[in-house]
Image 1 (cartoon, rainbow, N blue to C red):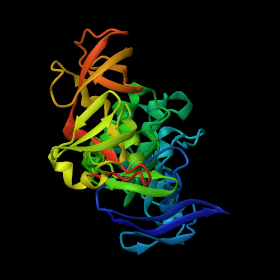
Image 2: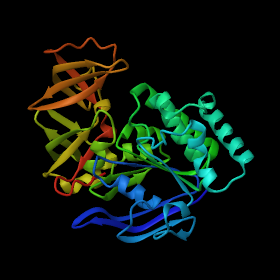
Image 3: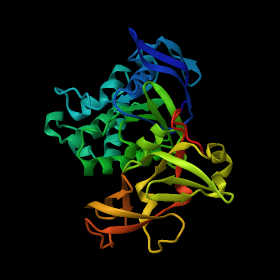
Length: 364
């Protein structure tokens, strides 16, 4: 195991700042996930840790040793790529054994390590096959095996599951987590899929435009996003954002008011939102925090007009009109809701999110 530390790391390509002031410490045995949209700098950061990209500024330490100018082979890391990067002319055994042979490891030990790792990954019967004879999922297992068999200090994963179909991707997520629990090796995983990040990471780094937006445990980031970008990126379906919501004070209480919707603000938020009384903010409501209601006078009740109904099995997503705005709600699959009908929704008030319209920072 090894701690990985990045101190004010930056990367420029000419005048383009791909990564800026990236500071993060990844603990021994931690499974850290870098997540963000395409072009946010997550893969570039991973490649700088691997030594495949030179850093422009800052320093990177692996197990307390500065590695800025060390070549990849001297960093004691193993990387798993999106496209598998297997040698097509070699068998599965030779692909997995290649790195061990370069280290001049005894043949018996190579044989033992490869077979043990192949057994763990369920590819023991494929050791004599060539990559072209394998399915995508099997090739990805070989790529994982090639990394695991080396027992490095750090594993680096660059979107390793993105080429797999949806069902296999879910299965491989589970297997990767089990492997990590078994090996307890420091791992850094890059993905653009926030579901993958939420289900796999001990902690998540959310990135945008080469900068860290938030670092935290998955549920912490989901429940308490630091800004509007994080709130919109983490969570599926994405959060509803209501521009121009006005904070109003009545008889010592605070309300978020928009056309067709007046939501009381929980007392726990009073201190943070009182300075915004009489001003507009951005209100955030997750679809899963809008459920079907039965009392039009209950706090958080919202009358809505149904425009689209999307059954997805365990939930029904409905696109509704509230005042002059469209919102997405996630309701029970037992609901008899129909298009062009009016429905009563109830907002989960304790889960409302509020953002400054200019800085886009979370207010509570």
